[in-house]
Length: 141
Image 1 (cartoon, rainbow, N blue to C red):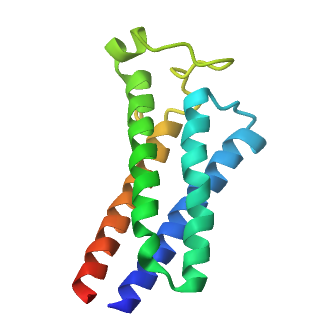
Image 2 (image 1 turned 90 degrees about the horizontal axis):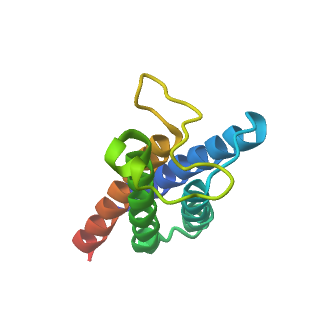
């Protein structure tokens, strides 16, 4: 049982680190300026790297509730952001987002993969893993 929890922590750390490095690549290397909603997603993703990274060294799987909370809130923002990019009725009523329009799409791979979509995938993977970890902890008690 303990090995599953450790693997869950490692998976969460890896996913959040890849998402963090990806967001930094898009902004710092490619020069894409993040919109306001992108910043909110970053604010929720970046701490997961630190929280889960420290938890690996402490062998503390109790952080699953924290990572699930960050991931669920971040995922909701990502889903909304993706919706205003791809759904006309949402983009028409989207609020102004600062210097960069939140409806803009810097990338659009295969016609549906945008930066908020990538963030949504990462948040969903983290949330699902966190929920599994909470279930495994209940089983072991």
